[in-house]
Length: 247
Image (cartoon, rainbow, N blue to C red; front, side, top):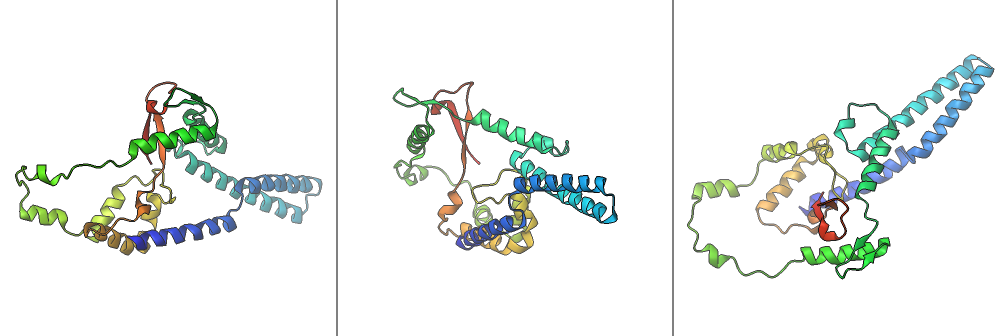
């Protein structure tokens, strides 16, 4: 399992560098492409020569490519299926993302001692304290003694089937049954990545899955997640009024 985690971590670094070189700042690039297309079009209108026409066409092609990159960026940010077949308007995606951020933003909260908190630093501190207490592991009694009074209902053959190591096809089927377009975790890899790169990563995926069934210690990275708060009611006032979910 650690091998898969290490490879994904290294790949993330490579993809970040590739993204910087291949795409750069897509918003600045779009602005430059718009200016260049406007300037070349004006020059062509002043002097409709063959050379100016080719430059105008080339600038328009670069503008179209820059626009497609921005639209793709906002589609991924919005992660909205209802926009998939709609108008390819980056402003619509931008507005959708900002709308979700405003709706889920916490600008003030009441602490456990009844004090109103308004600064982001105080709100973050209260959130850390509240959810650390909520999710902190507590000592529990040994469950083996109560389990000894429960009759055996699973046969040896059933137990062997349940505890047998998964095959390559079973792992692949589990990956394909996941929602490929769902939001990715902290590592940035979603279902589309695992499907598209299956032939490359399938051996590592199989090994990691089988190591889990063999009882190998689970790396801490597998437990990393992003937590978002879903309001239980309108205008939540404290963190108890929000339901934490793991993405």
